[in-house]
Image (cartoon, rainbow, N blue to C red):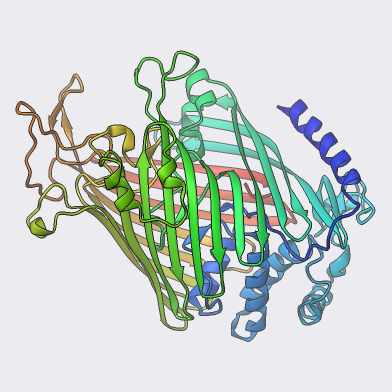
Length: 580
């Protein structure tokens, strides 16, 4: 893996040197900023404070230029920010608004940051990068005392009026200690992130990481969701390599991209009922029309179906059907919030040409194709009645029979969440959310069409036949990372099985187990919410991070879980270079 990274850096350097000619001026990045960046937590606070009208955090990630414009808009209202918030805003401005010279023509913001830098004895705005490999625009060597400075540290950076490219290293040492079993694990990760913009219109992004289990119980790595679907780690007991990438094109209102990246879709606090980040990243082609107060997005996503033979899940003998997810989003963005209408269809067969049209009604198309696929639709919204408070929620419709509404009919499959968030307390965010998923939601007669990607639920964090209360407290203490305390209480009615794994009672608690119609295995048409094997789970997460030198940070996470009268807890200590 290290050899591959060094080879990539070599080609990156040569590509950049050869691409410095005949390009057009770049004012901001077209590429997407990954959802792991803490800037999204800060933008949520700014959104709640009412500082980001006509912006929406329901669909992530954002393009870099959108983050730049949001930070500039927050700066215009910095009189409403506390001293801690201003320090954090300065931090993100230095990261996003200097890396590609975005401040060159923005005198007001430049002066404000310059004042802040002068007050804190920081280096001037235009000299805050240090690199390993020199370019015509960056010659400050990082392998010097600058490695301990407040400079942005990179392998390579080039930016002028016609082109930009950035290559940064990624690295971490991660220690996990299971306090109940006394088992522990030490993991090490190395990687690289390569991104930039060509002309005003083309963006590119590539991230590669490889994680080695250095010592201890490797099963503890599954406490991190990004390893729960890594085949190389799960099946071959090897290092876990993960990559995400995309290329994007934007011209005025039109946007298009192709690539693999982790996305979130749906309004909420902790829940995203449309698309979550539990399953593997989607491979997708995306087309969008974006305006100030309206946005339409079409995406054609390739998913991983369920192997037809449970004993042959990897390698050339594995037979895995094609699986696709088509999504349409229509989003209206008034100043007071957002209204979004979405629809999608999931199918598992060869490519279906009928679904490729961006302007279509998927429900009607699915019916015309002989009703073989899984269609769902819904609404999400955000409402900010006044500063420092907002309401977010999503209603997800999987299936509905109007004559059976309110009669506990199994096929009335819906999910919804609602959250209230306030930032009225100085430097503090408080949020409360309730989520409910009805029995059999996310299921389909063809299990291949269930809302799973490689067997993992991709819509929401709750299984069917469950609900959850979530309380979030987030304190901004002046550093890049807030102090977070998250409580959740979940109830789940599970299906009941015998000792051999045979299904005894189906209550709609598994996305891969639909209602059974056969005479011998006919399930009850009337279902009771939370019926079956009721499992109550209490969960608490405490996280804090501290960036002690620019790009270098240390993180602490503590988790406490109580389920079926069993307490389990663990902590993680992570030393990290860059966010990933």
